[in-house]
Image (cartoon, rainbow, N blue to C red; front, side, top):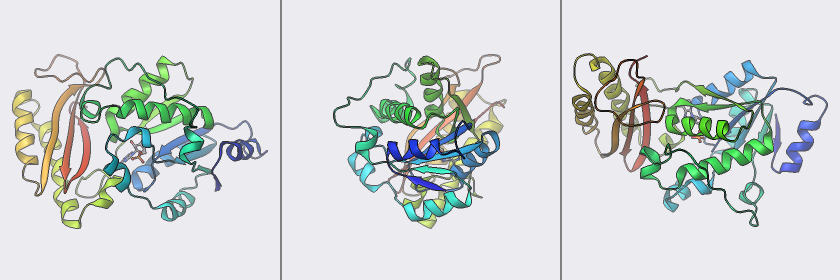
Length: 282
Ligand code: AMP
C-alpha cells in the first residue's frame, strides 16, 4: 500500500503506470478503523480495480470541540489493518491540505435532509460532511465511493449532493457491520468500557423488537416500547428515537401502503454518542 499525505503526492502515485486509467473505488474515513470500514473496502475491492482510502478527522463536521478533541486516533493500527485489507493507496492529508486557509467553505443545498435528526442535534454537521466529501472527491477522482448504511442520513445526503452537483460518481451503500451482541461497530466504541459495550447491545435488540412488532402495534407505541427498552441501558441518555420514511427522512406516525420506513436511534452511553438504524420493512 502506498501512503500519501499531499495532493501532489497522491496525483503522482495515481499517475504511476500500474495505477493509470484504472477504476478507483474510494472509502472516506476518520480513522480508528474497524471491521465496518473493512466491509466498505472489501466491496470496493470487488467492484473496482484499485481502492483508495482516506483518513481525515474533519474539523468542519464537529460542532462540539470536546468531541473533536476526544475522537480516537490509532494511525499505526489503521495502516496495518489497511494493508491486511489490501487497500492500494492511503491518503492522510493535513487540515491545511484539504481546507486551505484562503478557500472558503461551501454551503450546500440539501433539500431539508440536513435539518432533522443528526442535523438538528448537530447544527452544521452535514454541511461540514459535504464540504469534506466533495473536496475529497475532487482530489481522489473516484468512479465509485462507498459509504456505510450505519450513517443512514449521511448516506442519503451524500447521494443527494452527488446527484445535485452531477458529480458522476456512483455512491454505494454498504451494510452495517455489528459486534456479536448487535452493537454497530464504530470508532467511538473505543471510548466505551467493556460493560457499556455489552449493555449497548440493547440498541440493536430494541430496533429488532420494533421490526417484529410492526404489523401488530401502531408507530407511536413502537417508539415508546423502544424508548422504554433503551432507558434500561445503564449510564445512558436517549437523544432521539424515531421512525421515518426513507426518501426525505420525514418522521411518520402512521404507515402508508408501500412506504419504506427506517428506525433511527441516537443514544449517549457513558457520554459517548452512538447512532444506529434499522430498516423496518425489508
Ligand atoms: P467514519 O470513519 O466513522 O467516518 O466512517 C467512515 C465510513 O465507514 C462511513 O461511510 C461510515 O458510514 C462507515 N461505517 C462506519 N461504521 C460502520 C459499520 N459498523 N458498518 C459499515 N460501515 C460503517
